[in-house]
Image 1 (cartoon, one colour):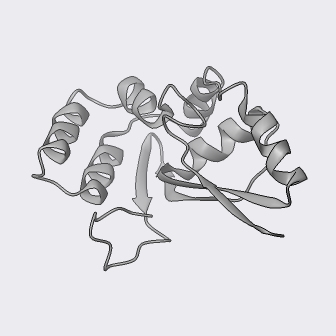
Image 2 (image 1 turned 30 degrees about the horizontal axis):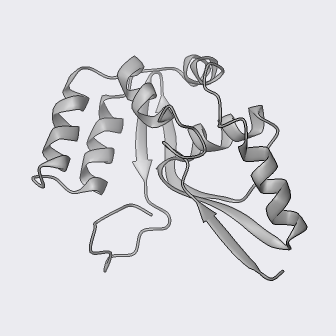
Length: 144
């Protein structure tokens, strides 16, 4: 392997920003005020995402069913194939939700390593967010 190519998911591989679409569909409108607070620097990205996930109300089945409506960039599979021909490993690094990223990629028949925040179902329609790749010195206070 000559090297690695790191690619973002929301807004890049999946141009429609699936994380925001999930929040739009399954959260109260408060998710938008949290987003504004983050954009204005009043809340860190990590705290914003965790609080938004606390607002998420969907069963795992409803979430996965909704994700069936999300597409990736039609050129992305070709990009991955070209990278592999050049002996480059493609890795998805996202500050989004692992279940969303992994499901949408699998549905598109794209199989890549994914590093993203862990969306964990806690029962019923409730979820929590974990940050398995968190590095405390991150100046941007991202989860990944």
